[in-house]
Length: 414
Image (cartoon, rainbow, N blue to C red):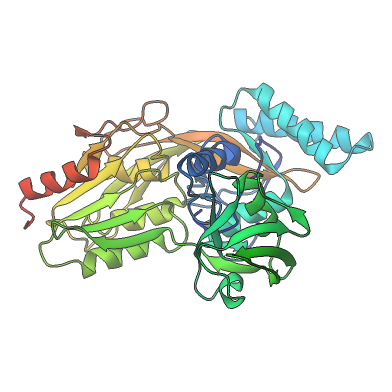
């Protein structure tokens, strides 16, 4: 999720009765090696480049939910067996007087033994944060930051209207301490974790420096919107639509961007580094370029289902999709649909290869586990899991330039 002071979450596994509520019971298609892998990869990339995306760079883990699974045990399936084992392990740990953390760890170990590559277990707080992120929000103060060569933590961006902005913090200010702890020399991800906290409404004391001035501010954390879709105009006149994750509302933002693009102008849909998200949103995005029809098929415990685009999409506008090894799950589903149906030229490098369906379950201690229950396929029947999507045109560093060249060949004005 692209949002300030965002950070971590550990790994996970499986469980018992399906998580259900009026607003959340989800099926996921593709989740990246639990939150740990996705979040850690993004944070590592941010640290390496010296600029963390979204104030801490925590991108939404591929949740990829399209249809709510039925509640109850998945008896008689691999999912059900592993769920039962995870639940039993958690019960035993609790009956032995173990802490909730130890109980969750026992469940994680049970899931690990199940051999489910994508199984994961989350604490209640972690799962709530995960869902909040996919709803297009994050908890924080509205800061982006990087670590300078001399080990200082420097503010690189301040979200308008955020707690940090209202306190007068500016780009270039340095963060010297958080809640009385000096942060110079500490990893940026650690500092942003301290800023982020656990929930909105709580306060964090921040020591700041600007030139020779040193002062402190007490900021109250808030729920802030993520920016998972951005739109810009390229030098060639084409419209660049960058989607970092399919959070709530992302699909409609893509549709709006396409409708607002210059008539007959080309579009570059940039899905590089997109770790996935809500399948419904990916299908909505596909509907911007398709006039109905199949987007993907998937199976859940042997039951075959299909996802279809809405009618009325722009089927003639030149389109190039940019992908790379960080393009995962829901983003791969969208890419495969547009490629199979001859709607787009795909440029970049082979995608990650995450095409499995996970389902959440609630463990006795309140934590949530997920296990793989099926896989999805592109309209032509291609499996993505472990294979990825092969682009039509290989390109790496010059991918965007190549995309513009392809658009010209497709008839887009230059």
